[in-house]
Length: 185
Length: 80
Image (cartoon, rainbow over the protein chains, first blue to last red):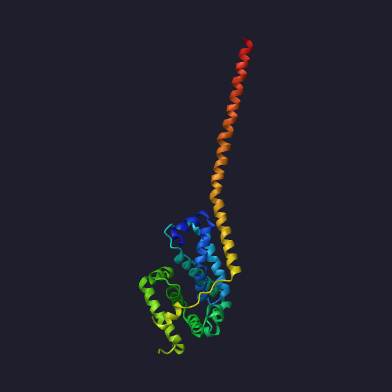
Protein backbone atom coordinates (compact mmCIF):
# COMPACT_ATOMS: atom_id res chain seq x y z
CA UNK A 1 0.00 0.00 0.00
CA UNK A 2 1.29 3.47 -0.88
CA UNK A 3 2.39 5.62 2.01
CA UNK A 4 0.21 8.69 2.60
CA UNK A 5 1.65 11.97 1.36
CA UNK A 6 3.15 14.45 3.80
CA UNK A 7 0.30 16.92 3.26
CA UNK A 8 -2.26 14.23 4.16
CA UNK A 9 -0.26 13.34 7.25
CA UNK A 10 0.04 17.00 8.30
CA UNK A 11 -3.70 17.40 7.82
CA UNK A 12 -4.37 14.28 9.89
CA UNK A 13 -1.97 15.33 12.65
CA UNK A 14 -3.60 18.76 12.84
CA UNK A 15 -6.95 17.03 13.50
CA UNK A 16 -5.31 14.87 16.18
CA UNK A 17 -5.47 11.70 14.04
CA UNK A 18 -3.36 9.07 15.80
CA UNK A 19 -3.26 6.83 12.69
CA UNK A 20 -1.43 9.58 10.79
CA UNK A 21 1.05 9.75 13.64
CA UNK A 22 1.53 5.97 13.72
CA UNK A 23 2.19 5.83 9.99
CA UNK A 24 4.91 8.46 10.26
CA UNK A 25 6.30 7.01 13.48
CA UNK A 26 6.67 3.54 11.97
CA UNK A 27 8.47 4.99 8.96
CA UNK A 28 10.86 7.44 10.62
CA UNK A 29 11.41 6.27 14.19
CA UNK A 30 14.44 4.06 13.48
CA UNK A 31 16.28 6.44 11.08
CA UNK A 32 15.74 9.33 13.49
CA UNK A 33 16.92 7.29 16.45
CA UNK A 34 20.03 6.09 14.59
CA UNK A 35 20.77 9.70 13.62
CA UNK A 36 20.48 10.87 17.23
CA UNK A 37 22.59 8.02 18.63
CA UNK A 38 25.36 8.63 16.11
CA UNK A 39 25.15 12.39 16.63
CA UNK A 40 25.24 12.28 20.43
CA UNK A 41 27.14 9.04 20.98
CA UNK A 42 24.77 8.17 23.84
CA UNK A 43 21.74 5.90 23.66
CA UNK A 44 19.99 7.29 26.77
CA UNK A 45 20.26 10.84 25.55
CA UNK A 46 19.20 9.79 22.06
CA UNK A 47 16.05 8.16 23.48
CA UNK A 48 15.16 11.30 25.43
CA UNK A 49 15.72 13.51 22.40
CA UNK A 50 13.76 11.10 20.22
CA UNK A 51 10.81 11.35 22.59
CA UNK A 52 11.00 15.14 22.69
CA UNK A 53 11.17 15.30 18.89
CA UNK A 54 7.97 13.27 18.45
CA UNK A 55 6.19 15.17 21.22
CA UNK A 56 7.13 18.44 19.51
CA UNK A 57 5.54 17.12 16.35
CA UNK A 58 2.35 16.19 18.21
CA UNK A 59 2.22 19.58 19.96
CA UNK A 60 2.93 21.73 16.92
CA UNK A 61 1.01 19.68 14.34
CA UNK A 62 -1.81 22.22 14.12
CA UNK A 63 0.58 25.05 13.28
CA UNK A 64 2.44 23.20 10.51
CA UNK A 65 1.84 24.47 6.95
CA UNK A 66 0.30 21.83 4.68
CA UNK A 67 3.37 21.77 2.44
CA UNK A 68 5.71 20.84 5.32
CA UNK A 69 8.12 18.04 4.45
CA UNK A 70 7.95 15.97 7.61
CA UNK A 71 11.20 14.03 7.30
CA UNK A 72 13.47 17.11 7.08
CA UNK A 73 11.29 18.81 9.70
CA UNK A 74 11.81 15.98 12.19
CA UNK A 75 15.56 15.81 11.56
CA UNK A 76 15.80 19.59 12.00
CA UNK A 77 13.99 19.42 15.34
CA UNK A 78 16.12 16.46 16.47
CA UNK A 79 19.34 18.19 15.51
CA UNK A 80 18.31 21.46 17.19
CA UNK A 81 17.32 19.62 20.35
CA UNK A 82 20.74 17.99 20.47
CA UNK A 83 22.42 21.37 19.88
CA UNK A 84 20.37 22.91 22.71
CA UNK A 85 21.26 20.02 24.99
CA UNK A 86 24.92 20.47 24.13
CA UNK A 87 24.78 24.17 24.93
CA UNK A 88 23.07 23.39 28.21
CA UNK A 89 25.76 20.82 29.06
CA UNK A 90 28.41 23.36 28.13
CA UNK A 91 27.01 25.72 30.76
CA UNK A 92 27.08 22.91 33.26
CA UNK A 93 30.86 22.56 33.61
CA UNK A 94 30.61 19.22 35.38
CA UNK A 95 29.57 17.44 32.22
CA UNK A 96 32.52 18.13 29.95
CA UNK A 97 32.95 14.47 29.23
CA UNK A 98 29.53 14.22 27.62
CA UNK A 99 30.57 16.98 25.23
CA UNK A 100 33.20 14.77 23.71
CA UNK A 101 36.01 17.06 24.82
CA UNK A 102 37.93 14.19 26.28
CA UNK A 103 39.78 11.97 23.78
CA UNK A 104 36.88 10.43 21.95
CA UNK A 105 38.70 7.13 21.52
CA UNK A 106 37.87 6.64 25.18
CA UNK A 107 34.17 6.74 24.35
CA UNK A 108 32.99 3.57 22.64
CA UNK A 109 30.28 3.94 20.03
CA UNK A 110 26.88 2.90 21.36
CA UNK A 111 26.51 0.74 18.26
CA UNK A 112 29.76 -1.13 18.90
CA UNK A 113 28.05 -4.18 20.35
CA UNK A 114 25.59 -4.40 17.48
CA UNK A 115 27.92 -3.55 14.59
CA UNK A 116 27.88 -6.19 11.88
CA UNK A 117 31.65 -6.35 11.34
CA UNK A 118 34.99 -4.74 12.12
CA UNK A 119 34.65 -2.21 9.29
CA UNK A 120 31.32 -1.04 10.61
CA UNK A 121 32.78 -0.72 14.09
CA UNK A 122 35.68 1.29 12.69
CA UNK A 123 33.30 3.60 10.80
CA UNK A 124 31.14 4.14 13.89
CA UNK A 125 34.22 4.97 15.95
CA UNK A 126 35.61 7.26 13.24
CA UNK A 127 32.29 9.12 13.09
CA UNK A 128 32.47 9.81 16.81
CA UNK A 129 35.98 11.18 16.44
CA UNK A 130 34.83 13.79 13.92
CA UNK A 131 33.83 17.29 14.99
CA UNK A 132 30.09 17.81 15.46
CA UNK A 133 29.81 19.93 12.27
CA UNK A 134 31.44 17.22 10.17
CA UNK A 135 29.57 14.40 11.88
CA UNK A 136 26.14 15.92 11.40
CA UNK A 137 26.59 16.69 7.71
CA UNK A 138 27.88 13.16 7.06
CA UNK A 139 25.03 11.61 9.02
CA UNK A 140 22.46 13.63 7.12
CA UNK A 141 23.85 13.17 3.60
CA UNK A 142 25.68 9.85 3.60
CA UNK A 143 23.78 7.88 6.23
CA UNK A 144 20.25 9.33 6.18
CA UNK A 145 20.24 9.98 2.44
CA UNK A 146 19.41 13.70 2.35
CA UNK A 147 20.47 15.78 -0.63
CA UNK A 148 23.10 18.44 0.24
CA UNK A 149 20.47 21.15 -0.32
CA UNK A 150 18.12 19.50 2.19
CA UNK A 151 20.96 19.02 4.65
CA UNK A 152 21.82 22.72 4.22
CA UNK A 153 18.27 23.64 5.19
CA UNK A 154 18.38 21.35 8.23
CA UNK A 155 21.74 22.76 9.33
CA UNK A 156 20.71 26.35 8.64
CA UNK A 157 23.59 27.03 6.24
CA UNK A 158 23.86 27.75 2.52
CA UNK A 159 23.88 25.01 -0.08
CA UNK A 160 27.49 25.83 -1.02
CA UNK A 161 28.62 25.77 2.61
CA UNK A 162 26.93 22.39 3.09
CA UNK A 163 28.70 20.91 0.06
CA UNK A 164 32.06 22.25 1.24
CA UNK A 165 31.48 20.94 4.75
CA UNK A 166 30.47 17.55 3.33
CA UNK A 167 33.64 17.33 1.23
CA UNK A 168 35.80 18.22 4.25
CA UNK A 169 33.96 15.75 6.45
CA UNK A 170 34.48 12.96 3.90
CA UNK A 171 38.19 13.77 3.74
CA UNK A 172 38.45 13.71 7.54
CA UNK A 173 36.63 10.41 7.71
CA UNK A 174 38.87 8.95 4.99
CA UNK A 175 41.97 10.03 6.96
CA UNK A 176 40.56 8.48 10.07
CA UNK A 177 39.71 5.22 8.31
CA UNK A 178 42.90 4.81 6.27
CA UNK A 179 44.59 2.33 8.62
CA UNK A 180 41.63 -0.05 8.44
CA UNK A 181 40.77 0.38 4.75
CA UNK A 182 40.64 -2.90 2.90
CA UNK A 183 43.22 -3.27 0.14
CA UNK A 184 41.68 -3.24 -3.31
CA UNK A 185 41.99 -6.52 -5.24
CA UNK B 1 31.67 5.18 -4.75
CA UNK B 2 34.51 5.64 -2.27
CA UNK B 3 35.17 3.18 0.51
CA UNK B 4 34.11 5.53 3.32
CA UNK B 5 30.94 6.61 1.49
CA UNK B 6 30.07 2.99 0.85
CA UNK B 7 30.68 2.12 4.49
CA UNK B 8 28.46 4.96 5.68
CA UNK B 9 25.59 3.93 3.41
CA UNK B 10 25.82 0.35 4.64
CA UNK B 11 25.77 1.11 8.37
CA UNK B 12 23.20 -0.99 10.19
CA UNK B 13 19.93 0.68 11.10
CA UNK B 14 19.23 0.18 14.79
CA UNK B 15 15.91 0.89 16.37
CA UNK B 16 14.98 2.15 19.80
CA UNK B 17 14.03 -0.35 22.51
CA UNK B 18 10.43 -1.51 21.75
CA UNK B 19 9.15 -0.64 25.24
CA UNK B 20 10.55 2.87 25.00
CA UNK B 21 9.19 3.19 21.46
CA UNK B 22 5.71 2.28 22.68
CA UNK B 23 6.00 4.70 25.59
CA UNK B 24 6.89 7.55 23.21
CA UNK B 25 4.01 6.57 20.93
CA UNK B 26 1.52 6.57 23.83
CA UNK B 27 2.68 9.99 25.03
CA UNK B 28 2.37 11.47 21.56
CA UNK B 29 -1.10 9.93 21.24
CA UNK B 30 -2.11 11.57 24.53
CA UNK B 31 -0.99 14.97 23.19
CA UNK B 32 -2.88 14.38 19.94
CA UNK B 33 -6.04 13.27 21.76
CA UNK B 34 -5.89 16.41 23.86
CA UNK B 35 -5.77 18.40 20.63
CA UNK B 36 -8.68 16.46 19.16
CA UNK B 37 -10.78 17.22 22.24
CA UNK B 38 -9.76 20.88 22.13
CA UNK B 39 -10.96 21.02 18.50
CA UNK B 40 -14.34 19.44 19.42
CA UNK B 41 -14.86 21.49 22.60
CA UNK B 42 -15.71 24.88 20.95
CA UNK B 43 -18.41 23.17 18.84
CA UNK B 44 -19.97 21.62 21.92
CA UNK B 45 -19.69 24.92 23.77
CA UNK B 46 -21.31 26.69 20.80
CA UNK B 47 -24.35 24.42 20.94
CA UNK B 48 -24.70 24.84 24.69
CA UNK B 49 -24.47 28.62 24.42
CA UNK B 50 -26.98 28.66 21.59
CA UNK B 51 -29.45 26.58 23.61
CA UNK B 52 -29.16 28.63 26.79
CA UNK B 53 -29.19 32.03 25.12
CA UNK B 54 -31.81 31.48 22.41
CA UNK B 55 -33.88 28.31 22.64
CA UNK B 56 -34.50 28.22 26.37
CA UNK B 57 -35.53 31.90 26.74
CA UNK B 58 -37.52 31.67 23.49
CA UNK B 59 -39.53 28.71 24.75
CA UNK B 60 -40.15 30.43 28.11
CA UNK B 61 -41.29 33.67 26.45
CA UNK B 62 -43.58 31.74 24.07
CA UNK B 63 -45.12 29.80 26.98
CA UNK B 64 -45.57 33.04 28.97
CA UNK B 65 -47.26 34.80 26.05
CA UNK B 66 -49.54 31.81 25.42
CA UNK B 67 -50.58 31.81 29.08
CA UNK B 68 -51.18 35.59 28.99
CA UNK B 69 -53.29 35.40 25.84
CA UNK B 70 -55.23 32.47 27.25
CA UNK B 71 -55.99 34.26 30.57
CA UNK B 72 -56.99 37.50 28.80
CA UNK B 73 -59.26 35.58 26.42
CA UNK B 74 -60.85 33.61 29.28
CA UNK B 75 -61.32 36.75 31.38
CA UNK B 76 -62.97 38.60 28.45
CA UNK B 77 -65.18 35.53 27.75
CA UNK B 78 -66.24 35.43 31.40
CA UNK B 79 -67.60 39.01 31.30
CA UNK B 80 -69.40 38.60 27.99
